[in-house]
Length: 207
Image (tube, rainbow, N blue to C red; front, side, top):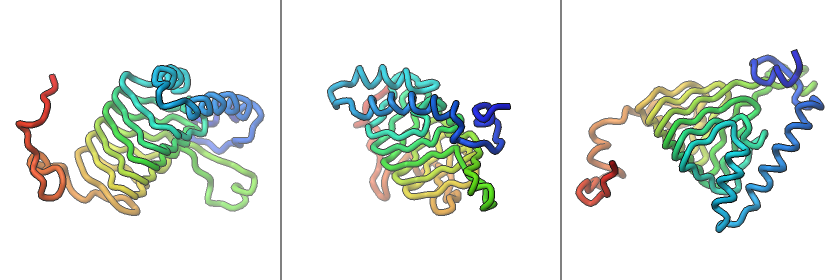
């Protein structure tokens, strides 16, 4: 099995392999082009994202600068995903994000890790584990999601959290390490921020 094939198996491999680096360089050139688009060049940005990503749905918006170790080529985005400034995706293997998920600024999603044993790190060995983020999640500013984690649908990850283990659907989870704080409940249907009530009559209705 080649080093490139090992990238997606969870096995230890050497990321400095010539075949891997040659592909990575081309992908990072395209990422550079995306990050240097003008704010008025929205059509160009959308066209580049479709070239860069493994999959990207309709209505996605990524605010440059965007950082990705393989230029997004192992990233699978659903529809209507929003990412604020400085989203960093270490996409050495596959990362999946469901429809309508939002990323605050400076979020890191990492699929790559390194062994604890110093002798292996000295030789630059690495392993990759896929990350799955569900539909309609909100990942708060500065959150870090480590390799192999799954986050369920509708879940909110608090700002600055470090997600080291799976988080279920329909919860608010915060902290380092990130833990479930509470379930999303009927209270959230009445209040959107502290004691501020949702004025449902004033909101635009969507079909």
